[in-house]
Image 1 (cartoon, helix red, strand yellow):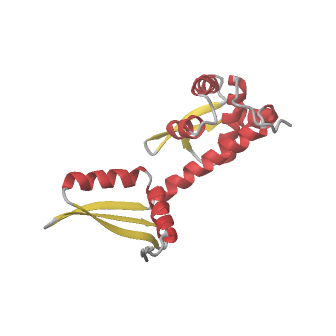
Image 2: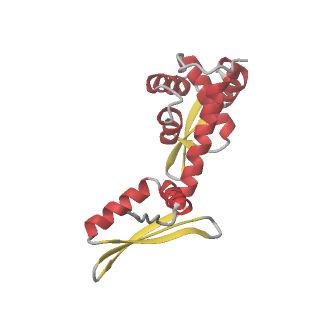
Image 3: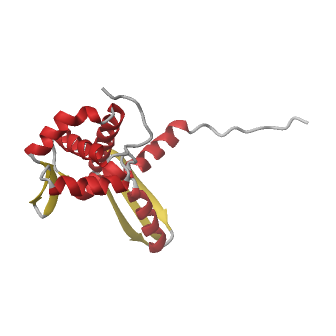
Length: 188
């Protein structure tokens, strides 16, 4: 079994196997955009090999596009599942682990972001940006930030929503690392 860490996959065939392997192991629907973000934007797969591999898998019926609820999903066919099982050892273990880790991180992030709410309320003195991130049963954080005008409030909202979970982690990290102000007195 290959378990070394090469710089990148340099074969469209291996990328095809890796994509089928991922989709077979996930056992959940994945849109083409999500698959791209998991495979390419995570840095696991090169864009050009990915494009060639995806096109080949769809043409040879290893993958199929299925529409549900107005979204198009990429799913492995029986042929794709067989290829993932039969050829998975041709892809180094490192890449199999990395793509699964990227997928699990991606879907965990989507889950966290789906539990974030943010709105802007105008006040007499400007705006209040109200942010909440929660789990299914409770709020992890509720915070209200002042902005002097609507434009700055929109900017704050936009920046928070780029990565709500990251914002939460940074605020929590800052709170946990916060220390009492040190006052130095010069005795001379």
